[in-house]
Amino acid sequence: MPNVSEKKLKLLYIARMLLEKTDEGHAVTLPQMLEELEAHGLHAERKSLYDDLETLRHFGFPIQTRKTRTFEYYLSERRFSSVDLALLADAVRQAPFLSQKKAAQLVDKLAGLGSQYQAEELRHAASSEEVEREAVEPAPTVPGKEDNHTTEELLRWAMERDVQVIFQTPGWKLSPSGTLKRVSKTVTVSPWQISRREGVARLLAYDGEEKRLRWFPLEEMSQVQLLSQSREGEKALPDPEKITLEFPQEILPQVAAQFEGHLLVEQQGKGKLRASVKTGVEPSLFAWLFQMGGEVRLVGPKKLTEQLRERAKSLAKSYKS
Image (cartoon, rainbow, N blue to C red; front, side, top):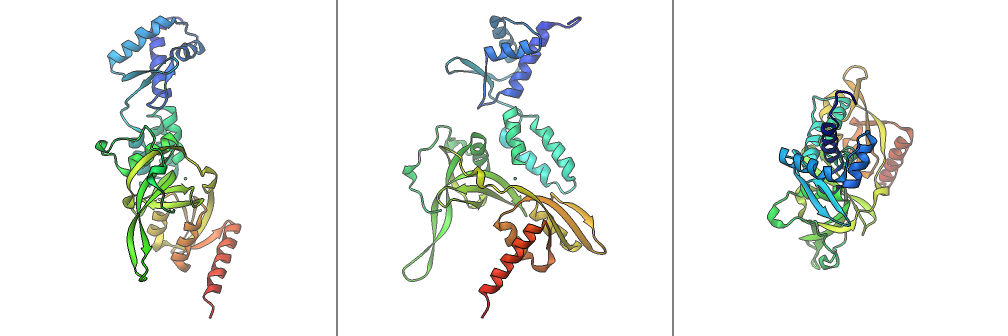
């Protein structure tokens, strides 16, 4: 490497490795650092790495050490936390003045501000009966109440760590007299996605007790705790599918809000639009189409239009006199 200082290059590669491959949940060892340097044609002694790490600490890198079977090193802080990046990505996706392509490009750049593991989580995000509280073991990573984390922060923390959550949500109970009483229910679920529609943040989660996906408004969730159990229900998540809709131009704001602005729109004659969007095919999609009545028409794919037609027939049949 003519005119290049191997010592300075070594320091830069170590810094990049810490930035890209470590966070609070992931660390690297000295042998891994040596292997990375060897891959770039740089030879180093184990003892010299201690000096390099101390130099980076002095420069301002928040490098922490933890002891497992060996010593591991990681960055304990970043300019943007995982929650910060997720919130920024949500804001970018919802920006009405950005095209879907441009929003995706910006989200990809935001992902580069975290570790590769945080980036994977960020890109991936870009789609019961009462439970006895004492029957579920809280995970050791649950933040204390004094930390005052928001519901969304806790849920994103759980998704990042691939664990289930337990929380309180409102419910109804039928009294012997036939009246309804508002009660609080304890729910345990596997959180998979947070989305916003018309300004309302909702959690898509898998309910292992009921064996189905459920939506929960974040504003109705309280006392959220992380659990030690791993998430389940990934196979139940709806695969994104491209659908095509037709509707009058005046209701574009309602349609855009339903799909968080992720629409490719083209003009279809005077005052009529056709839009394509990738979305999960789930009961809530059909419910929204029924709610919109004849104003929004599903024109593709054919198998979905047939499903919607059969649902409409079944609904009409139940109301026949």
